[in-house]
Image (tube, rainbow, N blue to C red; front, side, top):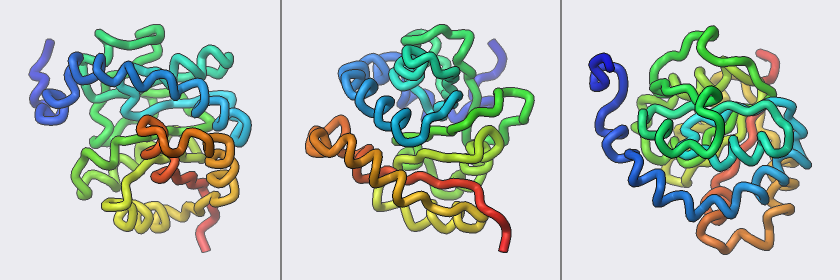
Length: 196
C-alpha cells in the first residue's frame, strides 16, 4: 500500500477505523426506514453515499434494486462493508475527486460527515457531491449549517423544503430515537438551479 498518510487525512482515518464502524452497526435498523422515505419522495434510480462507513444505506438501496455506490475515506470501510466491495470506492472526499472515478447518480447522499470535518473543507466536499449528482441529500448539525448553506447557495442550488418535509413526515414516529433524531433534524435537500 502506498503512503496512506499522504493520500488520506490520517486523523480522520484513525478515528473512523474498523472498530468505530463496527460499533455503528447497531444503527443499521434505521436504514430500511430512511431508504424507504427517500425512495418514496425522491425516487432515485441511482445513489452514491459519501462517507458511507459500513454501508447500511448502500446495502438497503441495493435491496430496493437501486444502483448504489459508497465512498469512504477510510480503508477500514472495506473490512466492514455490508455490500459488494466492488461498489465501494476508497477516496478522500475532502479532496477533489475526478469525474472518471465514480458513476453519475440521481442522488448524492452525505450524512453525518459535515459535522466531523473542518469548515474549510466544505467547498471541496460540496463540489464532489455535485460532480456526481444534481440532487444532494445532506445531514448537517446546527453548528455548521450556516457555513454549509452559504456554500450551497453560492453553487446556485435551491433548497427543496417540500421534499424535506415529506421525508420527515414519513420518519416522524422515529424522530425522538437517537439513531434517526440527528438525521431528522439535520436533513437538507438541495437541487441544482439556474444561475440568475
